[in-house]
Length: 206
Image 1 (cartoon, rainbow, N blue to C red):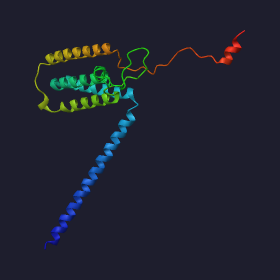
Image 2: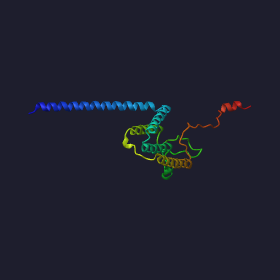
Image 3: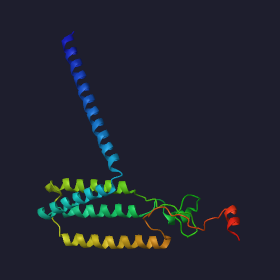
Image 4: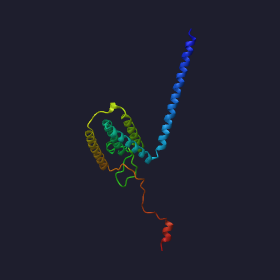
């Protein structure tokens, strides 16, 4: 009976399980710290968007000096356009709501309707977070020559501009048709006449 061999196998198994447990703890602590950082950055709207502008500028400078990776930039532009449309669209499409005709929440279409804040399909934080991840991934891809496909970049720019204009035109027509604005400028308040108490009214009479 090979007792020594069994002992070595058991020690190796214990060491591997200890190593995997340490790695899982490290990954968990890193993910928790990353999530904590995201939670702290949620109310810092201006600082988050300044950070995104800096990242986008670094990516633009990288592409400009490398003079390549236009396919990645074109794909990034398409993805940014999709995120923008989702950011400007309501969570519940009024056109779909008209077809279903349910009693769920809807956008106010008349002045007498109750004020409801605009609920986006893609919230602001997720919009920013998706854009940040997209620019970071695109920036990392510029370090791999396999993604540097030779292409005539003015054609890609023309295609993207045509797609942007047509998509935004359709989105604006959708806003005009269903009379909504994708921004909420604070809660509206009722400014009707102030009700005078009966005692004050009787005192004010001659």
